[in-house]
Length: 239
Image 1 (cartoon, rainbow, N blue to C red):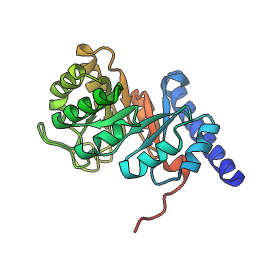
Image 2 (cartoon, rainbow, N blue to C red):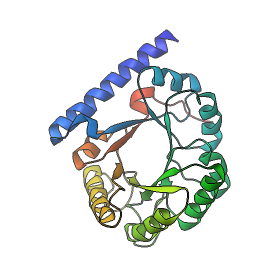
Image 3 (cartoon, rainbow, N blue to C red):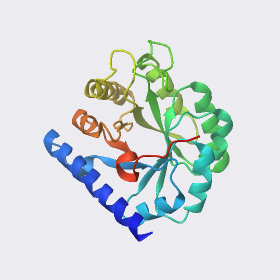
């Protein structure tokens, strides 16, 4: 376990250096960017080590993995983010542990989240997932609402009991005009965030960037970066 702690500490230090350098290059303060460590496929023991090393935000993308892990780590001072595509039949479970759902992309999901948050007596933060590979009214290949649908969905979240509208999230698209152009994609997300904040000033969170492109996200203005592989290592192949 000591070896794993040393490994994670070293990886975290390297990621921290990258974020600090990106902030300096962008003329931003380091505290303007929050690191979320994506712990999907890794065991609760790793989450516990990360907490010991000072990590306060962790993310998961599959409820069947996240729910038992969150339960096992419920004594830790962590904020849990759900970042995967979320089916409505998993909402009750996710609301039980997630402090923030970053993948809100349709009205039906807002309704389900609101119902379960009220039932659980919790306030759940929500990010609208933006699909920059989608047509004006379509959904993206990996989930998300087209830019033209943000306003309507944001109003729904803001008005829903038990939910809090926190901002926007995107995944750099693999297809469409922004494929291979992460910086441009993240800058587009920042423009959309500016539009959103005119109607909802408190919704100022912008989640963008992962292990390979966190620098571009920080340069564009992201407030949160989601890093998995660079901290935890290359995930084992499934199946």
